[in-house]
Amino acid sequence: MMALRLEPTQVGFEEKITETFVYVRKMCDAIVKKGYVKNKRLQNELASFRFARDDKLMMKLMNYQRVQMNELTEGATNTGKIFFCKILAPVCAGSYLRQSYIALSQNGEVFGLTVYKLGQQLDLIRPFDELGILDPYLMNIQLQYDQAMFQYRSVRVTDPMTLVINGKALPRSNIATVWLDTTVTS
Image (cartoon, rainbow, N blue to C red; front, side, top):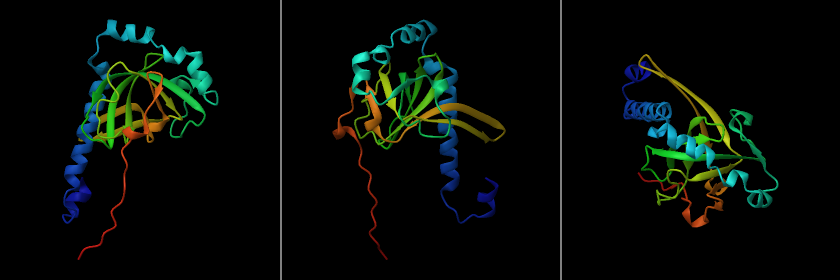
């Protein structure tokens, strides 16, 4: 923020920084409140992981090893691994390039999940859907802003084709295509 005050020509950056911290605050609040889901429902969801135990599904994914969240390597793509979770609630939905959720791992940890390039159909992933994430990327988010510290664990999915939703692969038609416009104007 100090850099923005010293360089006033950087128009719009302060708003983007504030936007980012509002997003992080919403994620942290929702994680602490466990996606605003009551404890009894959380316990029911923990007991109802179906596809994580489905040997038929795992035969199709035989090159992948089932893992728990504590077995994921932080800060790297966990190639060859599949991680199962349940969606508790969407957070900050609205952009088809990035959708964020609060999720529950099989061992009961509540964390953030961000899925990129899902397309314009915003209800592809709904509360209490079970997701299998191939090659998950685990991050530990830590930010300090205006004397407040925000910290949570998050799984990032950059390619929606690596998702298995309720035992089924996502159709390619539901993926957003991103392109760069290189038109030069004077």
